[in-house]
Amino acid sequence: MRRNDWEKRFELIVEEYRNKDFEWGRFDCLTFANDIHMAITGNPLADDWLGGYSNPINARTEYKKMLARFGEKSIVDGIDRRLDRYHGNMPPIGSLVARPQKENPVIGYSLGACVGRHFAFLEGSGLYFLKPRGDDICWTIR
Image (cartoon, rainbow, N blue to C red; front, side, top):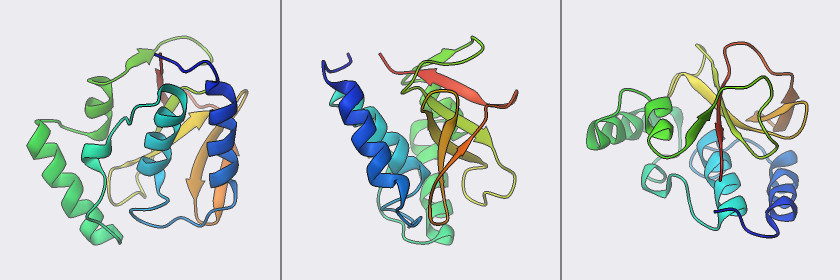
């Protein structure tokens, strides 16, 4: 259930990540999605998927372990079990997003959040605000 002040908390997380350099295990797309969910609901989305990695090689190893542990085929399946998919044209602000990304060697997606008419994704030296695409997968946070 959303907190009464979820919008302010959501904005604070977006601002915190806006200029953060991508860092495996601390400031990566999964920690961003987890922190967004925590800000909105007060509960983590995927604490059980985090930790134990600090580079793409051990992140991939940990990701494979988590898939096996939870019987999932992908991160998308894992989020599907925890959140409801959004099937409209534009998800509500605060919704989580997975964008297929073949160049992502770990999970094959970039995770982000809807911040209005754009989606925020953490890459390199901060958040990038990109327009939605037809292959984006979205989930609402209730």
